[in-house]
Image 1: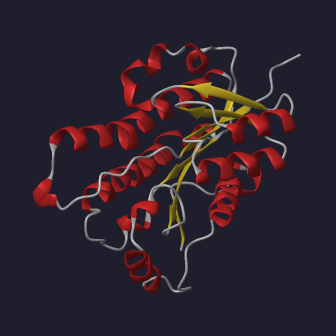
Image 2 (image 1 turned 135 degrees about the horizontal axis):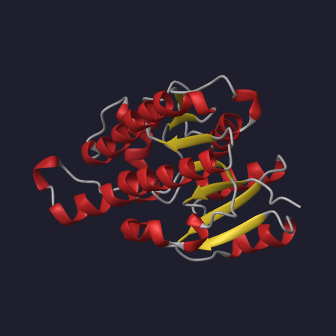
Length: 238
């Protein structure tokens, strides 16, 4: 019997990543969740959705080691989707830029996403799979935010990369899109003060935080067959 197709989701231990994994599982998908370390929430989901959730431990900051990471390059695996969700934020003014922090952020937010895309696309070609890649960007690429210029630069790079991938591999039935969420209540935004949050949410037409579940639902749509004519696009959820 052939192996089921699976969707690779990075940053699956965070609030958005966990919501994406839950949504995909509820829709009947098989999911491989990439995390730095296992979480109680993921283990509970693994027990609930017996046989449909695989937890893979890998530190994406070591992105150069990906090409020899067995779970990812195993030719018996069949990937039907990739959600490049993992990200870190280095928040500071440009005049305070520190090379080490900048390099580490680009390593996870951009370089790891590109290498993962490369390996997943190769797998899709090998198995003749019409698949979907979804890259999680940020509203900071649209609206300038003080202290987020460098973070926004990583997400802008991801958006440009996604459009190029869509052009390169559309003839093989491989789609690539970005989702651009507004500010959500996640670990990344927890560093903000209440005053900073209020200021940000006032710029949002709805005047409140973006719901994580709404972002996850949009990701699931882009991964699924109903979006099979959608590629090279950026979807703002704000």
